[in-house]
Every structure is written in C-alpha cells, then in structure tokens.
Length: 293
Image (cartoon, rainbow, N blue to C red; front, side, top):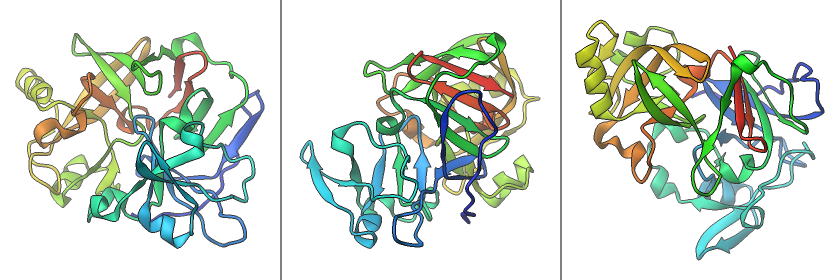
C-alpha cells in the first residue's frame, strides 16, 4: 500500500465542523495528522467496528508517553499540528499498544501506525465522504434526506454501530465496519477487475451464507479461492437494502473459519464495498446514519 498524503478541505455541510486530515486508499480511510514540530504524519486506520490501538513500533519511533490500562500496555497519541484533532474519549485518552509480533507480515497493517476505533468515534457526529475523499467531525447534526437515513443499532456498550439489512429476501444484522479489509490474490484482484490494489476494502459475511447465496444464485459473480491465504471466497450481491437505501453490486468476502465474526452476534460486516461511492453520516448522538450515494 502506498499512502499519498493530502489534506482535504470539505465542502460546506451547513453546520460547523472540524476537518480531519485524511487519505483514502482502495476504499480504506486513514487519518493523517501531522505530529507537532516534525515532518512526520501518523497514519491511523479508521475503524468503526474496532477498539483502536497504537503499534509498538510507532510508540518507540515517536517516543510516545505510555501507561497501563486494565493491566495492559497503552500509549497516548502525540500532540498534532492540527490542534482541533479529535481526542480519544475513553481510557484517559490512551490506546492499547499492539505488539509487532501480533502484526507479523499481515499486509493490511503495512505503513500504518495505529487505528482509531470506538473510543474516538463514540458520542460524536461524523461525515466520511468517500466520493470527495474527506473526513470531518460535525459539531451539530447536518440535514439529510429521510430516504437516505438508516437507524443505528448498537451492541450493549453503545460503542459499535449496526444496521438492519435485507439481502435476497432475508434479514441480517450487519456491523458498520469502515475498516473491513482483505488481501486478494492476483487472481482475485483480476476477477474483480476494478484496477484497485490487492489489499483493499471489502464487506464480510459468514461462509455458510455465501454457500447459500451461491447455490441459490449461480449467476452471481463468485470465486471460491480469491485471497492470498486459503479459504477466502468472493461473491457479488446485486442489491443490499438498508431501510430505503439500496447499495448495488456489493462484493462480500468470506474468510476461512469465519474468524472476523469470532465473539460477535452479527451476520454481516458491511464495509466500503457497499457505501464506498457515498457520503456517509455517522451520528452516534442521535443513533442514525445517512448515505448519500
């Protein structure tokens, strides 16, 4: 993955907002704030379905202040030139430290310093504009068309947003996962044929669901072995409905052993292959999302 740094200035939303320096790569979104008194930008993966972390390598390189949260190593983000950069709202502002041994050679961690998750997103109103490649924190609720609105459902901690989905006549509970990522093989990337890098955004679904869809609809584009690792399959679903919003031609990935669903009660992880051509409102204050696609 090659990160191209750019600070995007948002179009007016009609409400006061803070622009988050960011970059978009193959549907994946990264905040890229400039560290004060340096030429170094942090690359922080935005994950609405994750808890957030800082890699131990970044802790060492940036000499970040460390602490302990619930008996585990944690660290604080440095001061940024973007003084209004939204802070971490939980755990005294610290993020867990991810050891490099846990990163290994996984390509989705290449070139990132950490991840901003629930402790950054909660209790705020966000716009992620995948069309114009902009991210901002809204200081009031922007207006939107009722047809674009999708109510948010949460886990028991009110940290992780979910939406009700309708696919092929069945109802699914789907996590909103802005960081859903897959590393496709060359064959898989060629099969999709969109010219994007092999490491890219996706949406996840359980293997049994993919098997059922493929059996019922052999005409849907499908590839049984599409990933760098074994057991990764791809299927393109013509329509995914969320309230009155319809996402078209959504690529879903199933992983070996359904590991992305471990400990979760959802059926789907709805990622940017659904809404990557939309401007997305995530309003954690009023429990609503909106998709202008």
